[in-house]
Image: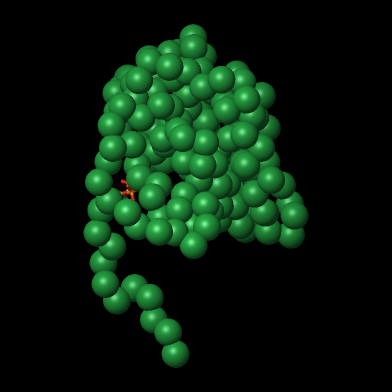
Length: 169
Ligand SMILES: Cc1cc2nc3c(=O)[nH]c(=O)nc-3n(C[C@H](O)[C@H](O)[C@H](O)COP(=O)(O)O)c2cc1C
């Protein structure tokens, strides 16, 4: 068995994108851990220009019906959408940091996740304003990225990382 130097490194190195989930929704405690990890992610200049929209049950079904591809969440019962104020120069970076925090928080409590960019075109398209209004997201915000979180149905093998991407002097 591989030994990790600490539990954080283990979560980082063993996280995988999970694409098969059981029917079980997250408990309130699990969801709180995930959303805390998003809220406490750093933002440039401490701007806190990111928002996290947590969807489950009928709210999630409605979004998926609009999107037209329920398979995008791989059977998971929870989806968190990140919106951010697009006039802020770091809005996409801050969103990315928050989404990875949620992926690692999920892993650390035995849950699986997959980041989903596939709904981006839809949530930025002609129906963008309808959803923003529904979610209470300000007009100058834009969808950045989403994350599916749930109970994994199986183990996912690691994908190799390309060599040559780490350069040290
Ligand atoms: C910005 C971003 C968008 C992604 N969008 C999707 C997506 O829409 N659907 C999906 O199944 N996986 C999506 N992924 C997951 C990647 O395919 C996955 O991270 C990559 O294949 C590496 O696998 P790993 O996460 O298991 O290491 C996305 C990942 C990132 C970082």
